[in-house]
Amino acid sequence: MSNYLLLLHERPADFVNHTPEEFQAMFTEYMAWSEKIKADGAYVSGNKLKDEGGKSIVKNGDGMRVTDGPFIEAKEVIGGYYLIAASDYAAAVKISEGCPHLKYGGRIEVREIEQMG
Amino acid sequence: MEAVTHNSIRESLDHLFRLHAGQMVSILSHIFGLENLDMIEDAVQDSLLAAMKTWSYTGIPDNPRAWLIQVSKNRILDRLRYDKKFENVEDTQDQLDQAIRVFDSHDAIYFANEVGEDQLRMIFACCHPAIHADSRVALTLKIVGGFRVSEIARAFLASDESIAKMLTRARHRLRSGNIVLEIPPPADVPSRIDTVLKVIYLMFNEGYAASEGDELIRRDLCLEAIRLCELLSEHPVTSSPKVQALAALLLFQASRLDSRCRDTGELLLLSEQDRSLWDRSFIERAMRHFGLSAEGTELSDYHLEAEIAACHAVAGSFEETNWKHILGCYEILQQRKPSPVVDLNRIIALAKIEGAQRGLEELGRFRCSEKLKGYNLFYITHASFLTEVGRLKEAVDSYLKAVELTQNETLRRFLRGKIDSLAGQ
Image (cartoon, rainbow over all chains, first blue to last red; front, side, top):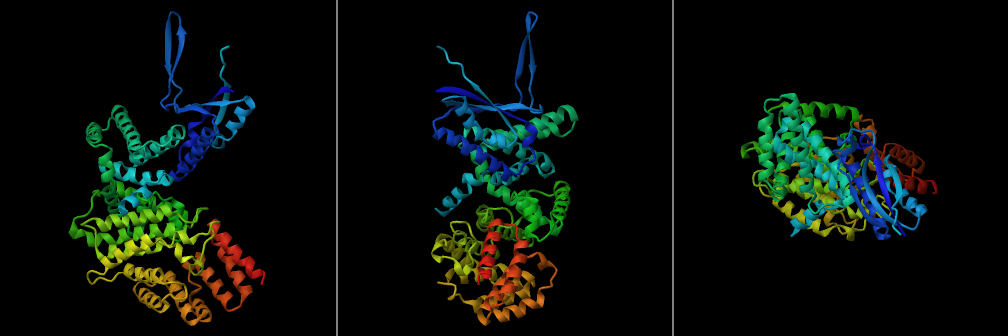
């Protein structure tokens, strides 16, 4: 078994203008999916990232240059992540395919965690 | 004890978002005033979006309302700070100070206790004389009940466009009409309560009839209407026999919610329902309100309708139902508020007593009524009378017409089943 990081990319504009009932329906699907991967023993952890935008840091001469963003206004942001356990990439992808994020226009990047020795 | 059970239903996670949408707008409007309704609705929308995303990763927090209030609060404070910085709005500092004060001095328990009163205040605002009479119901359904435009349109037998226009005008009045967000003083309650009760009545009907979508029984809507009605009936200023009568009516109807569906979700006619499934605790609650409604001399339409519902609730079987008493109630109702819908129900009761042929004759007299053209129950009734007298081919035509007018998938399936069984005969 290896651990895989699922990065959930999304376009913030896709989520505005929904009614409470639609939010309810989306939320229920996300919950059902995360409950399932927990029941299957695949779930390790998961978190939403804040919408406010983070910081980008690059070395700038002798100092550092720190910029804000990406912001919620950006075309695409990483909305959150899951860490899952799977036997191989094929299994990790299969688990990801069930995530409602894809249904609602998002994109999922699957990366295997490098394991030491 | 019942109040606790009731609350636990209302707080159930199934309907968290719509329930909170209405509650949050009412709470925050009480704090920031109706003139900020647009900002408040934006903040609530934002908080629901944030909840949907965050809770998807972390699960639902222990106190969802406190979570949502916290997020809405931050959104509102951000917005006020932004206005102060960039728009130079004069009152903003006062508003900002007041907002911070209110949020700091009231904890989640305060908001939990206050939420009922806040919703009553909001209902009375939506039913204020400054709001056009035709718009009050739609506005309350939208803002307090979290209804969608298309749902309101179906409840009113009106188009989406006309309801949307009506709501735009009404919201403008609500924001700018100098309306105080309050439960009216006792002397003003009698003149203000009727539109409030009508709102609750229609809210319940929308849930009970389930005019839109796949979900046959929108139990949450019915329970929300009952909850608001019981808030009125428990509040010393707003309670009256009429309020008790409406509470009784809604609870009698709601007692049949579970028996209206088979496992497959098919709609069941009253005659086919398993009466052992009727919720006795609802009927008992209804009876208590019905008893209280008899105090005083007032006779309202709700009294008559509650009496009809009580006849159904106490009947051991469909055949044992006191149809004569029901017919009498409908005849009085028809005199008090003539409407094609009441008349249709009167005809159904009459046909139970005098037969389907008599029902068909009566139906023929008003079938060209303009408003009923889009009303599927007319055609369903027509079809069932035709079936009873053996005019099966015509019955199929009427059921087809009813299918055309029905949006609800489950009811459509039920009607198609009727058509198939007639075609097989």
